[in-house]
Structure formats: C-alpha cells, structure tokens
Image (cartoon, rainbow over all chains, first blue to last red; front, side, top):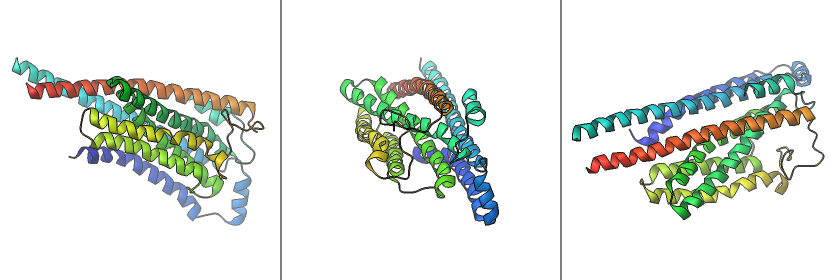
Length: 92
Length: 213
C-alpha cells in the first residue's frame, strides 16, 4: 500500500473519536432545553462540565494514540533489524 | 500529570463569568505554547541542518514537526470545544484561530514534503525551507490579538500580557504547574522520538548497504 494512504488510515480512529465527541456535544444543542431551563443552566457554574471532560478525553486519547503509534513503529524497526541480521548472516 | 488534573478539577477556583469551561484554559494555553515552541525548534534545527548538513539536526527538526502536528491539532480541537459554550460556535474565522490553522497546515506541509520527496539530502533541504517559512507564523499567532480586533481573549501570560490581568493567584499556580508538566512531557517524548528517528536513519543506511552488496 502507498505510504501516505497507510499513514492516513492510522489517523481514522482519532478522527472518528473527535467526530463522535463533537456530534454528542452538538446533539445536546439540537435537542435544546426550554428557555427557562437554559437560563437556569447558564447560571449554574457546572453547566459546561461536559466540555471540560471532552477536552481532557480528546487530549489523552491523542497522546495515547501517538504513544501507540511510536510503539508500533518500534516493533516494526525490531522486525527490520531481525530481517537484516538474517540476510547478513545468510550472505556470510 | 495527575497533580495537574487534580489541580484543574478540584483545587483551582471556578471563574465567575465563564464557569467551569474556563478550566479548559489550563490545557489549551500550555498546548498552544508547546505548539509555537515546536515550530521554532523545527525552524532553528532546520537552519542548523542547512548550515552543517548533520543528520542529528534533521532528526530534531523531524521529531519536533511530528510532535508539533499533534499539539497543533490539540490546540484547534480544545479551542473549538471551548469556543462552543463561550461563543456559541465551534469555529470562527478569527485572526488568532486562522493563523493557528495556518500553523497546522505548515506542520502537515512539512511532513508531506518529507514523505513525498526522495530520500536523502534533497528532501531534507526542501522541508527545511518549509519549516523556515512556517516559523514566521508563530510570532504572528502570539501577536494576533494585539494587531487585530479579535474575539479571542487578550494575552494574560507572557511578556506582552496586560498588566491588569484578572487571574487569581491559585489560577496562576495551576496554570504554571500545567505549563511545566506539559513542557516536561513534550521534552521527554521529543528525546525519545529523536533517538527513534536516528535509528530509522541508521536502518535505512543498512538497508541500502545490504541491497548494494
């Protein structure tokens, strides 16, 4: 497979997580509360807690995703080293 | 990181006007700081690579660009999530947001040039030029809220911050703890990635040697 396509495919889970999170948050605005309930929520300091959790969730998801990508790359490199060792020993 | 999370969720007082959503500030701003530092690292390492032709500097530039794209993506995502409850929209073509989006494209452009260009010194030189052009964007992002009238909050932190900043002392402490934590995390991952990049370069050389002999 072309390298750019295979790299782009790795991003699919992260994009999926981001889109789902956005849709979940957006949904709450589509099915909005009555004006009185909205006003009460606006006065409540904890009303936007879901946004704070969404931020932490997305930040950590991307960090773990990147660490996972690095560990996969490290595994690939170890395999390459093993193959190269085999090729060199066969030549010798 | 756990201390930072505890401070953000439990310790720091809630801002009166913005409510809980203001706590996104303790994540969003450190990410922004690292995103801008990273493009400077890419730019400086690229200049040194162009002058000295040493592969170590190219490994530093590449690693910083890869981490930069992660942090730039997070700046945009956390900014959008913060903008929704405060401005009522996920995105606006505000100068600060637009210049940050340009920074993201610069990082992606740098990595794409590296992917598409042939292996060896030529591709590295092309990418270094992209990095140098991209480094110009970092001060523009920082100064955007001074140069243009924007919806984005004014500078609270840094040399050009307003003197009458309304941040509480606990907010300052939480912010600086978060800033230091994210910076240490960035430096650690960066050092690991540089080592890995050097190994990748060495492996390429061995591959070439094996295929030639």
